[in-house]
Length: 425
Image (tube, rainbow, N blue to C red; front, side, top):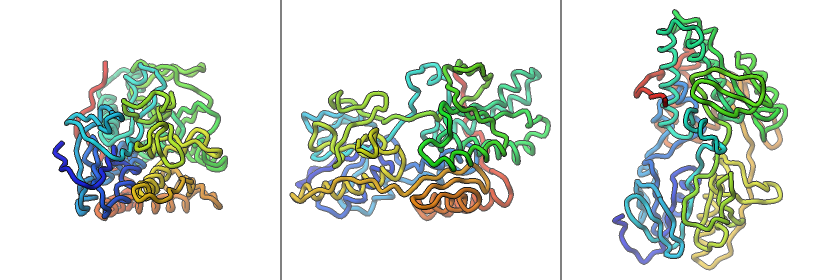
């Protein structure tokens, strides 16, 4: 991998997401050699992927080059590669471009979509965990309406204009709201010869409430917002199968649709090589202690979505969101420095700063520790938090200008088919 040998301890970080970057920044300007490896050369701001998928933002406005983030840090190296296996007995990782030894290893590989073993759904449904996947959804949405213009078969046209979103968490709710706004203000102008009123947006949630984990007030208000936008909200309904044409559920309601977007679950993106009892089945997350050490290993750590740190308050591990990942990454960097200096390490305690979701124009829900509010003010709070969480002045500026333009003009300029999406047969 052409990494120079050094007398400094080598810390290898797998993944340039929120957790990996927080750890890397915490280790800068230290007597260490830090090597970051990732299969992409950019960091993705995942909370805004749905806006890329619905034409609200350009993809490069929520991505930032990893090399630029840390190009002024001494003894820092980045390699564009995918980790295939960890060899803990040799303190080595195996990648697609070679092997690399480590003194301390941080696994921050993030998460991937969880289809719960349903191979049909995995084959035909759309997922939205990366920028390329979001661009696929954007292309498919527009392609559907272009195809709907050409068919004289009413049933086929309705299927092309029927969108099924599975999962009532923040991703599903925000995506449903964005699609509803497209239906209301954009698509009728783009396709005047189509009856856009026939477009259906169905949000399917397997439990009895949306936004599980947020307050009851937030859940109820989010549902009210969605219904007011024309979204069909289905609760206590579970999707059993999708063959590319028909969505089968555990109820009497089945849906004929050309597009299913799966936002019903995520799982850790674990890496082969560690003992099987280190991984929690189904969730695919590494078991870690309060110092983020993977069970049975002293110099291997896991943070962010791929880690499960069980506690009395969080028996199944912390929420798979940005804040726990960032906080774990920052503290782990401090603890590694303390360990190398033979100092006392600090156990991790999650500081829950709250959660929020937006449902569309002037509609959002916010749960903070002491306050819970919904509506216009919540929407501005949501925008402020997400805007200032973006990396880089350019990205902040572009997103801000896009939001102002979209708000004033009620438009989404980037509804482009840059690369056509090929449906699976």
